[in-house]
Length: 335
Image (cartoon, rainbow, N blue to C red; front, side, top):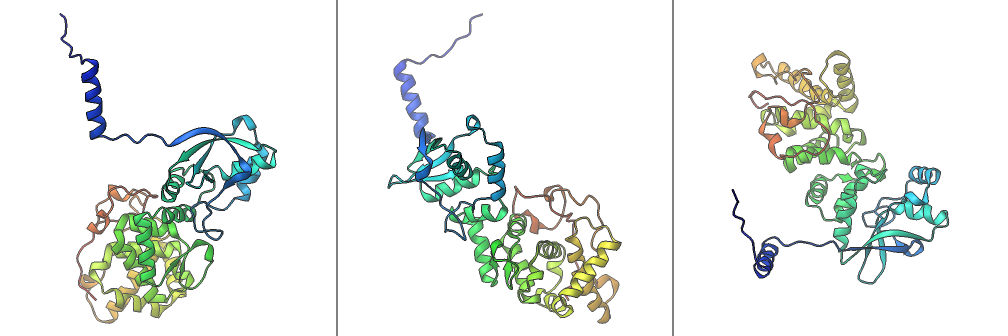
């Protein structure tokens, strides 16, 4: 049996196509395949060599390229031609350098036109397969692209008198663990990062060892379990009064005795122990103490597979590594 088919005339087909494009605009590619002279290419470097988005050259990556160089296997660079006709490398800076060293004065490239600098930075971040990119260089690229979350993380840090800067070294008030800050922000939202940084600054005044990856993550775990049961300022006073060495020693002792999953959990557990020690001295009953930190029951499950406080519902698509196990919390009085 024949099946009726609706066929459009050429005029009707063109009209339908125009309507579809009007409803769903198509952004056509902005690039052309060209051969570019490597000697005239520019790079919009990030700190400490500039204010842009591109990471500094990696000597390790350069050595690898020099060793394995094969001209026929060089993939096209990604280039932006700016309004003044200058050419800027978005992806392929290491290929540019080694090609010049090997005597190749021209390379194939996808040359984009009409890109804003912010778009270049976003493309650089999206081309994250570049070998040697680090959380810090990616974060700098996000800042250059005016990424809202990256800018918000910087605002929160500045409000707590904290500097996020991997290249600054271990200095007073400097957080080098930018990936942990993004990780906390992605899972707990701006309020979680503000709580964690504010707590640590109040407890230790910016002592470098207090702002490490394990400490940030451990305090975040404490925040998830106990923040609605305690007074942050009072707990910061307890921790700061004990001192950084005492906190580290207690966490190390817990690590040797109890399986809590990731090492960072021991720092959160140590804070809870210090709070309970104070409550016991005040004559509080067992029911008034903070509930025990859960043992390792599958510590490396992603957060979205685990039931816990609504503080962790801020992001529906956590895109970092799996977090420590976070279990549901029972209510307990404020201290």
